[in-house]
Image (cartoon, rainbow, N blue to C red; front, side, top):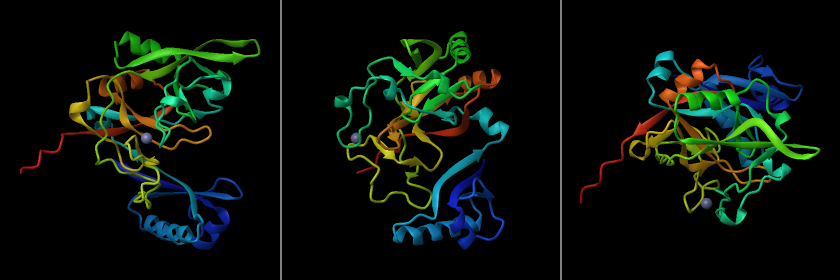
Length: 288
Ligand SMILES: [Zn+2]
């Protein structure tokens, strides 16, 4: 596995602090810098960020990791983390999708159950994708993906109707909502989470005392407990990532079996990337 870090940095600050020619401009005001994880300049950018944070400022405004696997690594993984890359808005709530907020955690806002069909402007779903999600974590899948899952007898998910809100009111659409129904997989403490690579949130600002939230962002690959996997092809973590905000809802991570990976690869499904997820054994009980 090869790993890179991507930073988005204000152009003025990039010119002031970074070597000339590092990265590519995304606009007149924003630069994108991608570096191998073990490049010395990653730590250098971390130092500059720390200095800025002390003054309540930001050097980079966004960072993300990209992981690249060999064919063999992907083909031998028992379980994979499906990372959706196709996003759209507005979220379902803007069109009348209902949630039971009274059932959500009062501390972190996680786990409010959706209590109506998902209603969207389905024209906003990115074209040519088989899986995509709103900024509130509502996941839609294409008819051909649903068909493939049914043909192969894949287990662990329901495909529920997605309504399109037209001027006449909600009407059926060709899309389905992906709802994971298998037993949640227990996230292992080996999974690193935090604000970013340089801030692992030691103060637990983005974690919930009741244990729902793993953190704001997933920093490492996913580690889950082997004995918590019921063998389903579709799965999700028990803990959530993200934050409850105006349109934002905390989201679990999606896991898929090798069998499902092969179906997705076979049909050339689009809208996601795959990372290897690790199954760990429960730590041995401590002796007295
Ligand atoms: Zn909570």
